[in-house]
Image (tube, rainbow, N blue to C red; front, side, top):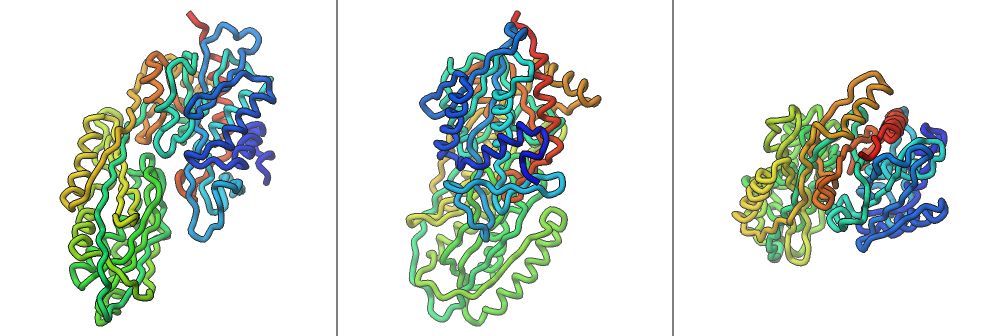
Length: 485
């Protein structure tokens, strides 16, 4: 089945267009050019700010000129993750989509529905001549996924709307009115290398097949972290054998739960079979612990040609102990909103670079002081291991406003269309809304979207029937935006 055969046709048409345009974070030139060309071809007013955000304006339809101006907002970039056996260049290749039952997926890569479906929906609104709405501004921001760069750099006066509808949520039937703030904490371990010992067995141990997911939305789902699992096995080996490590690598993106990690290690030749036995025992333990959330977990141990250098022993020990001690996962649940994660941390990536081991983590919380404390907790574990640690400035959260006018309209519109109450929630993931409020404190905001699962991983998928409901809901909201007072 082709995308243009799915409903709503106009939304899926533009989603296909967006999938054809490469748009990695920090490389949004091609999608920006596409948006500008679209505006020119449709005769719509547009502008681009210094950082590369695009704003396209559409006048009100007849009879709706006095309504409040609505800003529809999504981000241009996508998380670029692929399976190791997938050949795909995110800088040049289109996303290959396919339909699997009621789900839309991509072949071996992230789908990019986060937030390509928001971009496509805005384009569909801009292109439609048979819908009712007041003045509309469509904002497309850059580099949301790696640092909210576009939202940070957005200048006052670039937009003129009264209401902002963020189209970057992932559960149809849920209206989001708040989000977590976050920051990244990076540890750099100096990594002196020494000559490898003679007569040692070198092997590569790999963990893969994990579910992964979004480090905000999915952090409470008891999914395994590849970096923590690999380190746990290495800690066990280091307590039993004369372990050395030549390479270690795991994870990629700060906002994704790592799915794969590996290390190249060495032990005395006499312990060659023992490490295999230990791994089999370890696998059984881990499979039992994650029997529900990680059905495809896989460990491999392969012989390797001896490498000339290994990490200096004391450095290795301090590094392993720090990774073992650093907090990962949910730290606290909200006291105000049932089921909402309040504070968490994600051990995102481990990389060897230029004589160092660089570890990237991210902390989130709906309470600023708790986020700061979580970052300091993570930093302390790394500092005890001798690393130099920095924590970025981060981004603010979005405090819920249950009396929001646009929230009330969204609730009533949903009830009218579908006969049930939508759920009103806050999200543990970061949205750009908190940054918009800093620049435009009078904005009235709500966020909603179709149902996505597995975002930030090659398992990303979008539930096709929810796109039609999302579209109908958005049009009903736009139709019922109140007049300016």
